[in-house]
Length: 278
Image (tube, rainbow, N blue to C red; front, top):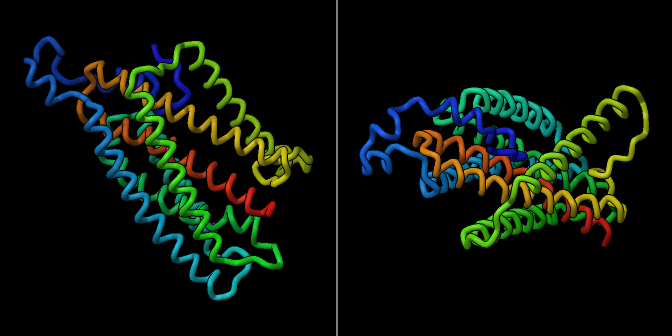
């Protein structure tokens, strides 16, 4: 049924979760109280976002203090924080992907770890493009982060409003195309890491390029991340109508958080590239 791009929303994952009393055995009130809803998923998404924001701000401010003190490059603790939070979050995400009912316990620590990762990345990305400039002003980093967060929420809200009208639905062909596009981007990232990092090749890294082509690539990534977020909205909506247990709201919230964080990263990267061209 679902050919979505988000691996956390595979149909077989949700089939595993339907172990509660059968739909026919529940009366109407029990059905509403014990099944996943859009409203419940939205509330839990806001909870996870708040947790990510708190840990993200803490991590960013901790590293930011070193920049303000006069460090033009990355503070020494940036990569340990990024690596530890990324690996911890990846481990939790894998567990939730294969055991979706664990999301009610693991989604919160996942959000906290991803917040720390995003907080460190929010310093790394602007410094990557702006840190070496002679007239570099560290205060511009905070401005870019604020702008990226605002644009991310604006895009997410706009997509939600558009989808709620019922005028936009992503068909099976579009879902397959989206899956292929995301898979292609993932393969490109792996090729860069393996070929450039291990084999000493020189494949252009458009994520790290502020050239017109690199900026165009980042704009494309923002569009792709936005499209995947819209697809995730649709998949969560469809699944909420399928009678899965209410605990799966945490899993739906986790899936939406994954897309929102990706969108934020791509928006921040695009803004940093544009700023570096000024």
